[in-house]
Length: 380
Image (cartoon, rainbow, N blue to C red; front, side, top):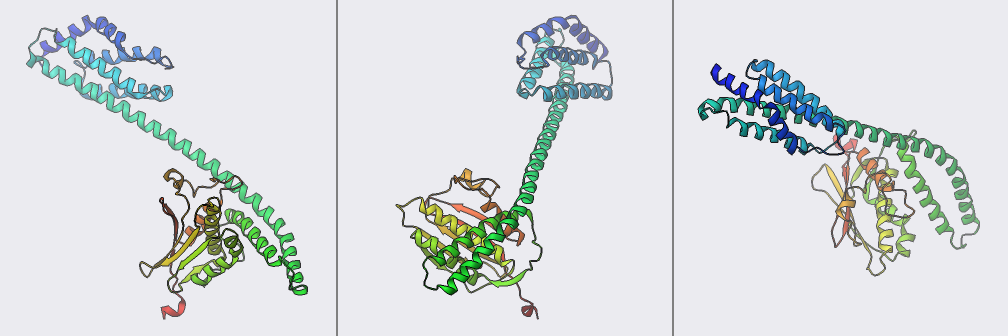
């Protein structure tokens, strides 16, 4: 750009500086809630003066100044917590006023083109620096809030684990005594009614409190992993839940593949099966007009994993709820703890498996995926 052209443009912008800024001030958008609304006009004036000075300083120095101003303003926008759209609109409004004024300089288009390109570059760089820093700052704020929420949530779970461990050990002692007396009554009075039901209810109560214990410890002291058969475990669970199945008039359908060896904690997998099947029975009980059905299928898609589908023909679970049903403390039941499915997922994932849910108007299916165990003798 020729020196005469630079001087002419600079002289024109300096001469009309106040008029151009006044025009920008009249049309700029500033929210009444913006704590930095007094600074907006000052910032605009500073950028305006940088553009005028851009014709006399190096590009390297120019970018440093533009970057510094952009970072400063971006920090203000973050603290103001105002829609960033206002900022972008105001900057582009200043760009438009600049270009409109250059048509009055009295130079040919070819002489103005380089100046227009330079000014355009300044505005583009300024917006890029400001928006980038604003986005980075907002992401940091979100990350900090997320860490705080996660930390608070983890504290709740840790406290709950400590409380429940103490509570359960105290609670299990009288349960053990009651169960012992039930067995003595059965021996002395084998024909006495309801003893089996009382024993079954106590077993279910023991199962419920065990769910809380699993929240406090990933691996329980004194427990050892073992090989066990899936089909036998499913039969045990159905026998355990027989009173609930009978009471709910639920039809159980089974389609199981050959018994598959699993390796892990059989009692924990049993708890998962009990919880999911019992939840299905309980849900079906709230809809007496249905012909209640729980369908249990197992199948292998390859030699590494076995899948267990537990389906019921109850109402569909809405998609927005399916995203949260495995979260702790989420429940739709009045007396629910919101820990059942969360514990189930924890157990399955601890066994290197997956637990998912799919629901449509015809049925709701919980799918358990578990690795098939290879017994030592099969490795020989």
